[in-house]
Figure 1: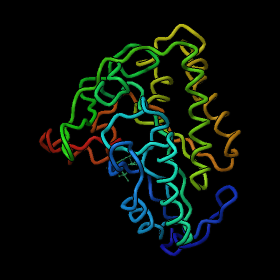
Figure 2: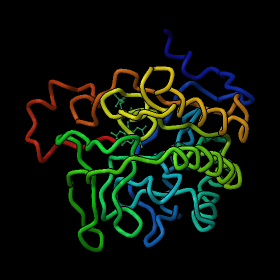
Figure 3: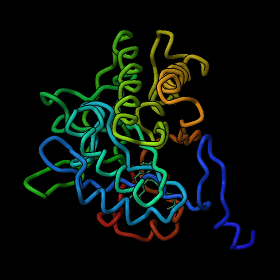
Figure 4: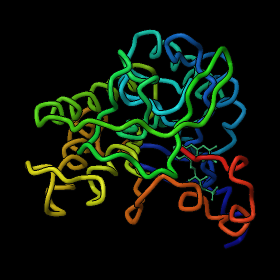
Length: 268
Ligand SMILES: Cc1cc2nc3c(=O)[nH]c(=O)nc-3n(C[C@H](O)[C@H](O)[C@H](O)COP(=O)(O)O)c2cc1C
């Protein structure tokens, strides 16, 4: 491909992208505390990257239980929506297009990150592999990697409530001025946990056959598409994913294998 093609317009749903360069979702853990609220620093960060034709935000938890790393932003409280509006206004002022990545970590969390220090929620009460890590706060601006806590299985009614929480988060994203949303269905998080037979041992209509294990994804996509429109909705997949471990997530396998464990970054 000629280099110049990068700088040609491209249609994406209702939008015309200025070029074909994309900023992927990258967790930064810079939200204001308490409340995981997007802030001026984040608005500056995204505005600086508006030269990309298309941007997807860092993963943003759709509800308090959806958080697996300290200080990641949410998109469920009025303060968070107001905070995200600063980001979208800063991006739009420079002619950029930005989608919000809707994230729920499911079992990849820790009791210290959960409301009332409860167990994280998941399709089944099966802990993530021991090589999966979460990031927890140990003091002001200080944190450490930790093993995810043992999750509890969601009831059937709770699964259906979660579908509605995704739809509500999509409404919040539009209220915050986003141009669309991407549903994070990859890298071992909640939707991926439903799809994978490793983490989903359910016996209701959300488990068992592949068709059943895909039901949660289908319902979330339908509910969110009704809110934002199918032409402003992305779905991020990692179909063969089994675990959130560093070697599996990063392509630079050879470099990482030679790296000391405490220097390896977990990519949310
Ligand atoms: C620091 C960091 C944070 C990331 N955060 C997210 C995230 O919030 N959501 C997501 O879907 N992927 C996330 N990723 C994965 C990236 O979007 C991307 O898929 C990954 O870096 C592989 O692309 P590359 O080979 O071009 O680096 C993250 C990666 C890095 C390095």
